[in-house]
Image (cartoon, helix red, strand yellow):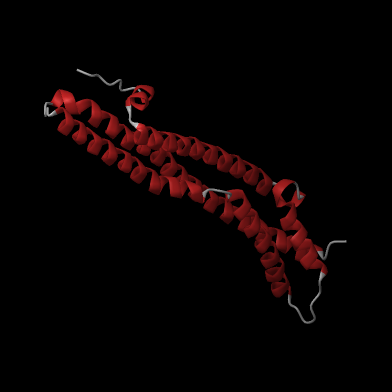
Length: 204
């Protein structure tokens, strides 16, 4: 009776050509998933540090302050203090939205991996089970000992798919919420800086 090692390497080595291709694809998707998670985490860390010292204009928030300073230099006739504060905040918020878009980077790719990986794994499973039944027909033997190794190899593709999809789904959800919180903090910091610009007068 053939036996199948339940280690990832053993399941890969015992799989057929299509099964191996599916496992390689899902393995690459899993690695890419963790790269995206780390990349987004570093971006969040840098943004939080920059927001804490927004008025200093260092790091990634420099374009936001530049947009505010440029808007503060323009004077509009009959503009009230409230209207000017709103105009400055809007100019900085436009720069902030561009910054957040760049910081999020390829975060949507995590959602793609989370939704597609299980189906790719399921395709590998269905293909492997079909191959197992074809082997049963060829061997003319329906015993469990004949079919079990092939089904184990087929189900491994589903396991690979879940291994890629689960961290991608959790990472996308948690990082998306974190970026939302950072966006709210950035909006509050921009509003406070707009007040400072109006009260302090246009920059020199």
